Amino acid sequence: MSFVEPSVERRSLRRFEKRTVGEPGAPVWQIVSNGLFYVVVLLGVGLFVYYLYTFQRGQGKLTLYLPFLLDGAMVTLIVSTLSMVLATIFGFIGALGRLSRFAPIRWLATVYVEVVRGTPILVQLLLWYYGLGYVLSTIGFDPYSISYQIMTALQSNSLVPDQMSLFFYGIIALSFSYGAYLTEVFRSGIESVSKGQTEAALSLGLNSRQTMRHIVLPQALRITIPPFTNYFMTLVQDSSLLSVLGVIELNHQTFGLALPQTDANVKMFVFILGSLLYLAICYPLSLLARFFEARFARAYS
Image (cartoon, rainbow, N blue to C red; front, side, top):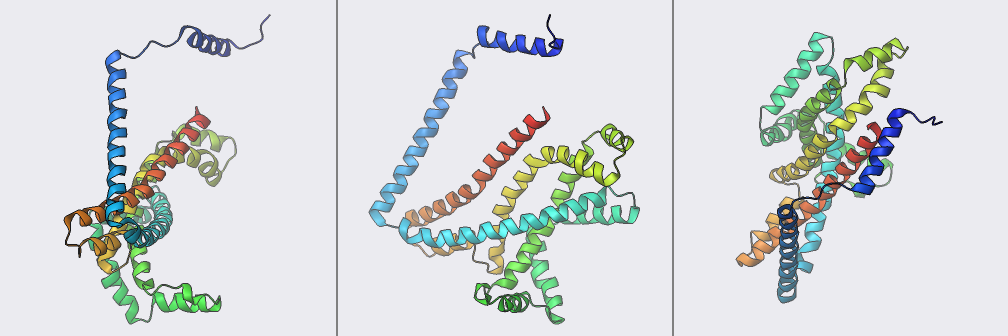
């Protein structure tokens, strides 16, 4: 006599049939097209690597320019990471404001989202530095001096960069702007969880905070991973706008090395190296997002 539930028994039977009988094969044209695609990709990658090798062997520009570009890439990565952390905080607070039952808070969050999303990020960046930065400097607020004093107490003031004020306002501008976009991402993720689950959690004795923490947010996080990653990669690319303030990041370094060149081949080579470094930063983020998305999908399947 079997004590296995019928549903479990049926699933086991289907898995056994798939292993023994097998799935229907893909059409021949699809297999051929997939094979040609991978051949073309491998051929393109091989030709590109050969181009870099021959150019480096002939002119030795890779070892000359790469250290400067890596320094710029490190600045880009630090600025993007700090900006995304702050943007996540702004976005979560904004999402709670958009979902608030208190009308003035909801209106304030709505105005924040609509104004920021309706204006260019470059204009916001300039307003933060030349507008708000000037107002704060007139009342004695100087990010460089404050950071220098704090690091002096820690005997590490040599770590404070000369461009601290530029970094400060640039990071604030990027995080404030992307916080508006993440507000809508988090709001839609929270609202996508059915209200029945919230009502069930409240009926079981959980309060609103416990329901949000243990029931709603874990499911909303799974939904918001893909758009969150997309915005993170876009923020990495938009960090190049800080070059208008004089921040020496990857885009600034790339243009500074490429534009003085009179040889068009060398100029293109430098731009290609800069693009590859941006790709080296963004592509692992895409892989990480796929990993977490698959991990959460297994957890909730």
